[in-house]
Structures are given as C-alpha cells and as structure tokens.
Image (tube, rainbow, N blue to C red; front, side):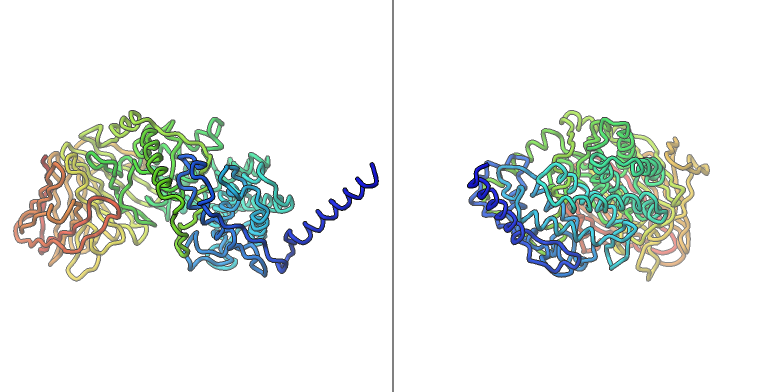
Length: 636
C-alpha cells in the first residue's frame, strides 16, 4: 500500500473514533453521562402523502408526533432512558418504577426498523441512541427473579412482566433483523426476557394470579413464541408447553369466557385477550400448536353468541353487560374500522365460523380503509395534536399488530355467520351454562316472541348485577339491559329505603322445568320445556316464568318495595306509562309490561347513556307493597 493511502486510511479511522467518542452515548451504571441527541421533528408538508398506502391512513398522526415521544426519553441522571411523557396510560401511574410505561419501547423500535419511503426515522442514529437508553432502563427495572413492578417500587407482579414479553418482545423481534443496535444491549434485553418467561412459567403465585386475571398471563403466549423463533431454548419451550396446556382448563370457564377476577368481563375479553391470541396466532398458524389458539377462540365465541343480541338491520350488538367483573361495555359494532391502537382482530375466524359475525368483512374493510385514507388525504398535512395526559394518545398497540397475520370473511361468509347466531337460527330453546368454580349460572331462553339472558349465583365483584340481564325481541331489538355498577339502572327489586336492588348481591336461584325441580350440570345444558326460576329476597321471594308467549314475574315482599326496569329505547317518547302498563314502541315491534293492581309507575327523567348505541337506557320504577305481578309480552 502506498504511503499516502496508509495515511488516508489512518485519518479516516481516527475520524471515525473521534466521531464515535464524541457523538455516541457512553453507557454507565449510574446513567450520569452526556445528553442523548434529539430526534428530528417531521414536517409533514415535506412528505408526499401518496407515499402512504391506504392501509397506512393512520400513520401521519404517529409520524408527526413521534419526535415528542422519542425525545421524552430521559437523557441523563438516574432515570436515563425512562420514557417520560404521558401518552400511554394515565398521569397518576406515569412513574419510573412502572414497567408498563416502557411498553412504548415498541413505538421507538417500530419507527427505527420500519423501512418505508415516508419513514425518516429508519435506522436514525439519534433514535438508535434513545432506543438503546430505553432498553437499558427497562432492563435495569427488572427484579433479580425476572419480574417487574407497576403501581409501586418493588411491587413485582404478573401484569408488567407478562405485558413486557409481548411489547418489548415484539421490539426485540423487529430489531433482530432490522438496523443494528448495540449488541450488548440486544443480548441484555434477550436475557431479561428469558428471566421474565422463566419466573412466569415456574412461580406458583404468578400462575395462581394468572388463573384469575387471564388476560395478563396470556400475553406470554405471543411473547414466548416470538422469543423462541429467534432464540431456541429447550427449557423455556418445555415450560411454555406445560403452561399452555394447563391453561386450556384453568384460564377459561366451562361456560366459555376467560376468567377476569374469576368471572366474565367484556372489556378485557373483547380487547386484550383478542390481542394476546392474535399475536400468538401469527406464530402458531400451520404448526402443531394451532389448535390451542383455535380452541380458545372458538369456545369464547360460542359463549359470546348467546350474550350479544343484534339490532334489526344494524351492525350493533347490545351485550349482557351486568355480569362484567372489571370494566364496562354496552355494545359492539362490527362494521367500523378503528385506529389500530384500539382495533382488535380475529384472524382465527378463518377456522371459526361463529367469530365471523363480529368482525369486518373484506368488503367492509376495503370500504372503510378507502374512506379513512381519503379523509387523511383531504386533511393532509393537518393531523391531530398529541394530547399529553391521555391514556391512548400514543399507544404501542398502534404498532403491535402491524404485519401480523390477517384474515377477513367475505360479506357472504359474515352474513351466513350472523344468520347462524343461536337466537336467529332457532326460535325455541333453553341454554343453561354453569361454572362450579365460582358458583354461577347463566340462562338463555329463546321463544318466538323474545330472547332473554338471566344471570344467577354468587356475585364475584361489586360491579355485577344479577337477574334479568338482557331482553331482545326480533322486531324491536334489545328492550332491556341491566346496567352494571349502578344503583339506578340495574334490573331487580329494591326494598324501601335501600340504595341497591337485591340482585346486586347473590342470587341463589333454583330452577324448574315444566314445573318440576331441575338442576344444571357444569358446562352446557340444553333442557327442553318451560323453564322457571325462583330465588329468595331478604323479605320474600321472586319467581320468573319463561312462558311460550311472555315472561311472568312475581314478587312477594313484606312491606313497600320498588321494582326497577332499565329499558332500552330510541328516545323517551318511545315509552308510555300508566299505573297498570308500560308500553315500549321501538323499531317495528312493541313490548307491553302489564302490571297487577295497586302499583304506581314512574319513569325517571335521567337518561343512562349506553355510550355509542343509538338506544339509551330509560329507567322505569314500579312502586308497591307486599306483592307485585307483571308480565312482559311482545308483538310486531
């Protein structure tokens, strides 16, 4: 080599060393070193909107606001690497000990690894430095046994540990074949994930907690499947298979729902669980493990089809909400495309016809995507401002499901599934489901004129209200929906001076079939005949008969009491009241509640919002004493 060439090479090498020394962050245990470089802010006006595909209609908002999130990574001091901005979860929990905040590592990794013509952050050195700092901070948060904390320092628990395996696990998966980061940080992150898997799969207390809060534990399925795809590990794989197999019985009720605080919860079952299973599905489809995810999903939708009633001519379903144990949800829409931070997909529907009734069809998805894309183009480069302090402002869920397996039914396949919903396919049946683990019974009765859900057994959380939970008529749609966590709009009997109906407590119902005592076995029961229920009140008894043409309710109660009826209607004028009848006229049908003598009927002025439904809840009270009989009948 010529002397000039050698000198040139040496100068280049020296320049490289100087550049790395002065510009790249230097890592230390205490975090007291040079500030991290700032990530540039994007001016959308400089990016051609045609570079975004139709399916990327939502991306400009995240691209515009990403710099604020990336630059919130603390640059120095003991919290160096903490993502210190309130855009994922609420301000009160945005603390450096909360590993849930650090799930936004995935947001950083997604922009760093996502190679698209509009993505100025792909392989960006400043973003790399901040991502490395965030991963280092997350690793430093971990307890020696592999767990993380959420609500207080060193309060190690399942949720922040298991959710991390899904979000940080997905970030590591993207980084594995994406632009490089510091190999030592990659290795340390991989080791931290392994520790999280090991403690979650082996610790008895963690498993027991997971049996009752199953959405938390089931994050591990997708997390470990991503991990094993890149880091084969015989021990972790064996432990995973053991827990996955055991979860088939321990995590899911014989009724079909996933346990949340030991019971059903629509919010978690319809959201986090769908995410858990979707991420896992991407890695098990076509493998011997596929049947686990199909079986879980199929059992859940078999349960859901009895608890969600379709409004005539609409895509909205009102649900049997009074049984929910943790969150509150009134209804679901099946033709609306949501922002990916809130959307939940069910690609398993390819193998589960019942699930197709509740998902977008291919045609609906294409139409919704085109409309949202055109809206984005019409407003471009204007996007919403980043609202700091709000839970979902910049959620890592927006990136979690990106590029995962998808499957949507055709319109014909969806419509066929809708037509096969139990209460639409058949006009006369009884379906009773019992869970011995928590002493609950869920009864569904279909007659030509009506469909009803009746809930009984032990109250599991303070949100729940038992008794008549949902009544539906083919022409009118949902006409009664008992409201959870309510002292005003829960169906039932309220003693004089009491705040809550009796049905806010245990409902120890006994059942009859054609007048004879009948008891349900655990799991599914399909008895034939006229079914009735009876249960004690503190000062009397209550009987409900599900007859061929009507529902008859008899209340025997010492002294004055109030019967509460939470009715669903298009507007208050749809309900007409006298002292011997309540008439609800909605859609193409009418429900008449005929009331025995001696009662006074009062329609309350307050409207109970059903949050998004075209119907609202209007409460009607029947005041009487000693005895009340009323019948609910229907006609088109």
